[in-house]
Image 1 (cartoon, helix red, strand yellow):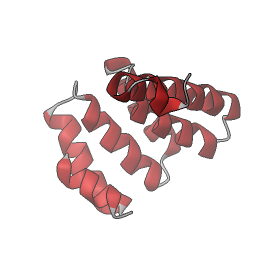
Image 2: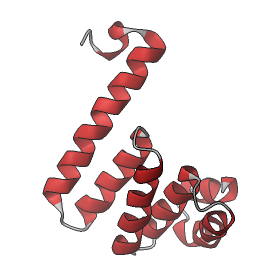
Image 3: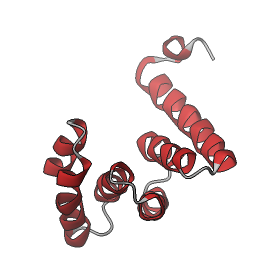
Amino acid sequence: MQIAFEYLKRGDGPSALPWAQQAVSAAPKAFPARKALGQALLETGDLDGAIKELQIGINLAPDSPGLHFTLARAYQRAGRLEEATRERDEFTRLDRLARTQRSGAQSVGGR
């Protein structure tokens, strides 16, 4: 999984894909593995596959801001704009909550 994320960080989705697939095979209930596979599929143009994997990831970890952000990107690329907006809004809510818990309300503009 870490190798997949390293390739993704470098912008190399095709190289990340087999590592992400292997991670999901080894740990199908690990949401980071689903995120890695979803991102790799998104970067290689398999929008339907990416959306499916990211939705599974969200079912496993509904409070993960990163999953919602990546799913919003996938929906945007697929032209599913309402769903993209919903996921971006959920990302913003979860991100704000996480930052507030870490650093207090001042870290998110006093909200």
